[in-house]
Length: 318
Length: 272
Image (tube, rainbow over all chains, first blue to last red; front, side):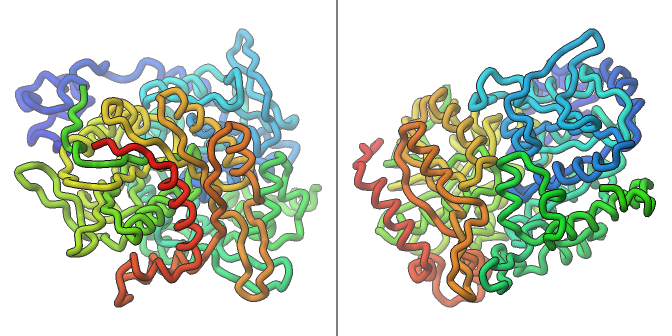
């Protein structure tokens, strides 16, 4: 791995690629050719997002831990209040899962004079994903980072989000282009914070630790950590078992170690997988499941943290 | 053009791919490596998941260092028999919690360095574990291996539709870049309750098999969820036996042994 030269001016500097220290650096050409100065699109994004009251990111260093599942639950829960307008943005460009989970597969995006219209799953829940732009559902998006960044920018700049109470952003695993870009583009208009999802085993925690480290470096506030797939209750004998054993203390220990709030544990329920495949609202269909209860209590906590607690009237709403 | 002289004594190159994250690419890579070693082969494993490297933990090698020799980076060997070695970005980090926050060009440079600068020596098999998706790492490894004639790719999926939807994209990626699909593994297919032996399909079942049939590629088999495999990985430090021996007593070893035998029966031509 080639380290930065000792007196690296930084890739954003005016001297990037042309300073004396850049001689011989393997990244010199990249720095030289990259555009300098503030991005002229940032003010446009800020004005587009001016009508969005709360922005929440769902992150995890690890794949397949339930980022999209949790995002969909969060969206449905927020949208169950008919007075809330909710937006959902999927920036997992190479593996978009949200359209399937929200039951919006096969939809196509329409554009109007005011920009691309989101796909409305219900009256007050609009969403955007690259899946809506593919000629065939199985098409692979074989894109390098720069192209992905361009699309993410368009999702923020060119989509007619309108006035929203909540904008929830689902992300791919890792700490790379998509994550850096969404933070850069949204920073000016303010991100309420990130919900970080993990599963209990150390192999997952290892990557999630990196994501927390990333949030700290990037200055993204952390709303809290959710431990998903924690424990499984056999539907036959009600015996509990750990599928992904928390040998190092699971999400709770990591939250403590990293000094971030622990939002709760969500047990596995095979019906979630089925609901996701069919695009059904799990929280509504199985509201008595221990999994639903755990998720509802986590969402309550998140609402409190962003200053939108449910009044008791709302709780009685269907 | 890429320099692939470091791979000139590697007989077979297999990639482990999946469009979806968390389906068990690294578990399948690990178990494939262990099964091949127990059949007497010499195996190297390359981890190109740069932002979330799991292999050092899987092989119980966390905290180990890569050594620099005059010929390049020496991979980390699991023991003195030198049957199994691993190269991962995880070995190059100061602290295991450090995030690698890199944009595409830097990842591309790293993948190139992993192909060019690692001293693999003589290997029967080189397994390449990848991150989820079809982006920088994947495009780069396809470019770097263009002249290396890899044998092909093993695709890992879990059974539910949300996962197979992403794996379909990966299959299309393989066609586009010319990786032969050696087979599909359906991981996390069913969980047998340790209390009552009832099997629950937590992530549904049959999705991988259906996918293989639809795309007309070989189906290698189903792997159930086995919590004892997680424990085997997590508790290997306190065990007296090494991972290869321990794994042979796992229930999954037989399933993987059969899957690997299917691959071996194809008699893929050696590159050397």
